[in-house]
Image 1 (cartoon, rainbow, N blue to C red):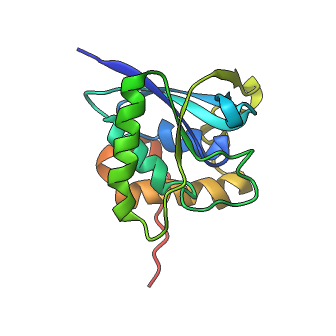
Image 2 (cartoon, rainbow, N blue to C red):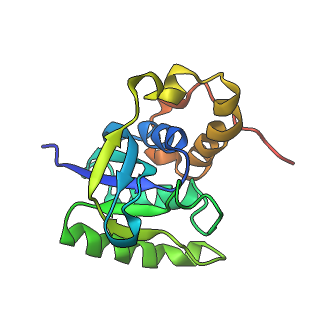
Length: 175
């Protein structure tokens, strides 16, 4: 029996974030667009809503993958546009996400800046740019910015990737 849940994630370009989560097993849908939260975070920021089967993909693994596929320790100048966040849909999800982020801290040299925020509202990207990577994998932007994130998936999270979607990627080996 499928147990479908959703979580919203932001941190980098929504084209990149969308491609990462579209490439995972257990993810049934990724909505690309702009999210807002409450308080100091009411401005819209690029993000995705990930719909997933919690029996195939845990919330913990989604957040771990998210932490490793965007600059989750960098408080750079574009943080308003690219807010590093896990947007939650319930109090239970909020508590779980906070615990997951705390447990992930030991995987990073610098402090994780990813916030756990309540989901407030969503505006979908225009249709022409949705599913950007899988419609345009050979565009320079995809090759330069998205492929390295997908290579992280293959190297670090191979057991959770949809191999059919990523078969076109060849890992760049460094010696």
